[in-house]
Image (cartoon, rainbow, N blue to C red; front, side):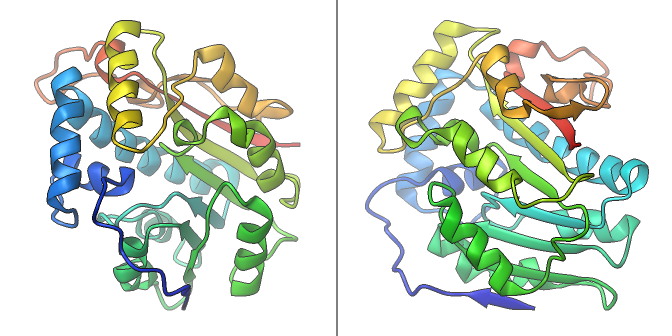
Length: 272
């Protein structure tokens, strides 16, 4: 178990997407500035609380499917966020105790709580690296340096609720290709991504709130999200709203949740 530190200080002068997400999940690891920004975003779309929960639920299901149906035993989770149990490694190791997981994020607050991400089973291994997805070369170097993942065996790349925070000047598609390139055949991409497709006015307003708070976003259409999976074999049911991916799409009361309330596309693809 290891954590790679850079010594950066917490910036509490402006909101951070990971800490806003923690607020939406009902966590306590955020600051007043994050809560204020989250409340403004929730005014534009109150369903953000449910979207955050469904994002986590998709991660749990995708992890189990990859472990049980595709033999995956290793994960690289980028944009980890503040630890919320069960974490990805806990889900994976509940299926395969020997699972190995490397987490990566660029928020010093995540580093502060990294020990939560490294409570592995005796059979498995976990590590945390502080790295920025917009510099994939440095990120992958840090992951390799951690020495946890075996790059001769399949690895699942987990990019949940991350890529909509990477705007076009950073070439998000090139970033994903760079992250996938060193992974062997049989590896996987599991990701979800906010979309304006189901309710453009609301999600354009949410995007404006995030951008004005200092966190630019780019919510993409189904066609644009599908581009991230170019060259991969999508597993059923393809790219759909995340609360329907290997799930009923129903709420706790048994009623159907409208896609517009979630607006988070999800998919899993296998590398040939």
